[in-house]
Image (cartoon, rainbow over all chains, first blue to last red; front, side, top):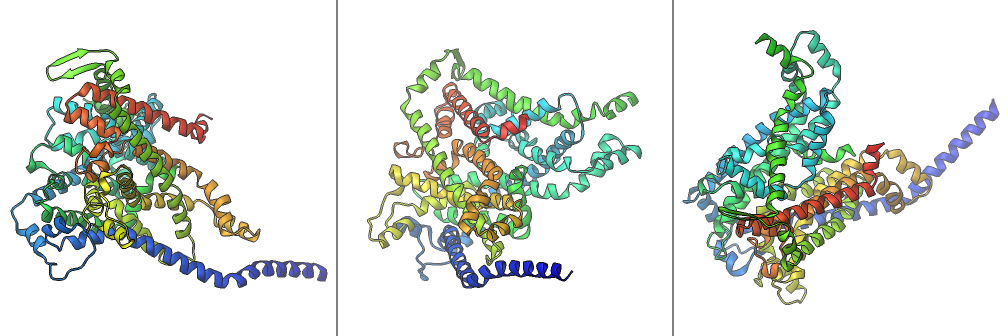
Length: 303
Length: 299
């Protein structure tokens, strides 16, 4: 008995020695590494934030200054003013029409995409049916083909369907969004089937089960995908550029793009408008950071 | 009516009802456009005048120097973004994941911020940063180092560098988050036992982190190939339009846009699109086979 305890305690001692020994000698090292990492990441952060700072600073300078001297970090207090912001809010231009269009389109896109994609995802995740595998391969196929390749025939298709220059033309092709469907399928396969069976026993229809039992428990998935869809819609450029033809219908990215003339006569509005267009997303990001990160990284979790 | 309700409610019919929106989207906005673009690629499409011309569009493409310029630009962009946007974000994620790291959440948020901006805004900012005036940000930086100002966006090399820097600025944070979520799946004990065995930080990164991050790396690689080959708006915004000097910023999609929208030559543009499609699918499938993902699914 005594022997045993002895053996045990020496082993224990050895372990402690082994683990404590390196820690004692590296304590200084750890602080050094910590400081090194901190400095390294602070430098990187400064580089990342620099373009934002540059454009923010430029939004307080007159546009002519930008054309004459370029975008830089010089702070000349004599030329900094709120004039551009005054012009943004009171001047005569279409900025807020575009802003409103972007807002409306983003909200519509988020609602439509979530509802349609969740419905499709539920169909795939819960049921077994004959064409399930071939249809699922179709979902993957769409995910693998970049939109840019199909934009021309898609554009002709919208013309044929009389959807050109309409909101529906923007929304319709992307309501059943493959990546979002894919995410919902993964999310819903994890839901216990008992809920569905219990619903059936209680006499609910297949659709009633989806509407009353499943939709409420999909809230976290909706939050992540809603943010993803909203961000993509707010920043969407190429498709609206093809579909919209009148300035009153433009969204913010296209509207801002029209201000980019070689003569630079619209720089006041371009710069201040660019700054202001980032604002709603930044505010949302600060409030719902976790959902942003979840939405953006959702695809990789499948591993 | 009751009967119809019963049929609709059967578990055999219900899934098709749920999936109908997808089937419609697939047919109307994927199969049909793909089909029509394939047909058009064998035609000469002028307004009101469509003519079947066989492989002429393709033959013309192969001797079209500007097309090959666009192809080489796109491939170069894809390769270089992969070289930058996989190793560095992985390393940053490895550091940020460390418990000894201070302010992890703050750094994560800061790194993510560029991804929130639209290409239009980001492109505008970078176009001005790389402006040709002596007072533009990049020129003030290099003149502080004693160099003469450069017309960044008018020279092949520097223009390309600006494009890469823009891509790195926007996507480093997102890729880092991908790797961070991959790191969560690596058990802490692995690092601890490796540390007891005497592995230093560098060895732990090489022998544990990199192999175990393989699924995430494959994912990031796949989307980088996809996004790299299909890149267009970044170049469009950086050069304020689709026309960069000597086509230094022209990409395959840019050429497709130029032919189809700007020159209204839909047949030729369709051929460009189909080549790109075959190319993208080819590279992605080889890559997935090579990295062993497809094999796993077959088993």
